[in-house]
Amino acid sequence: MAALVVLGGCAGPPDAAPTPSPTGPTASVSGAADAFAALRRPWAHPPVAAGATCPVATEVQRPDPGLGPLLGTGPARPAGVGTGAVLHYESPTRGGTWTDRTWGGQKVLWAVDPATTGPVLVRGRQLDGQGGLAFEDPAQPELRLNTGSYEGQTGGWRDYPSFTRVKAPGCYAYQVDTGAGTWSIVFTARGPVV
Image (cartoon, rainbow, N blue to C red; front, top):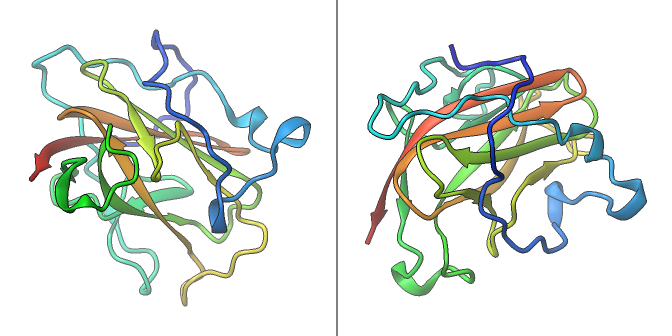
């Protein structure tokens, strides 16, 4: 099952990355008025032993005809993670397109259910190692989705283009936190594609 609505612990934060001010539909307020502060809950998904089978999300739905298949359950889900919940990521030096060349990465579109209001916080980490997971370019440790003023697709789901950044292949999880709870979406990263 891909969704967890429990709060648990897992030692150690993912690799820290610089946190530039987000722009566009992911922009958030900062400082004392940080609408995302209450969503920074403890990590919910347990680690996976090195060499063990990665418990990838198997639920794939297409709740909005304007979007592709979405992985996992919950109010925010990624599109662009391939068949079998595999993210094929590019080398940080491929084609000279990355600003931050310390992380590999791949485009991932996030979709948010029209019933979800308020901020959506997405974080991630490697479950079977210390490789870390970040977002955008340059890399930052969390993806902040503001749902308040953004129009959705024809089915009402709102889409947010982004990049998922990793440094090593392995078993990873996104943690999605909203005012309604916490969900985990587990996937495998393979690469880097050169």
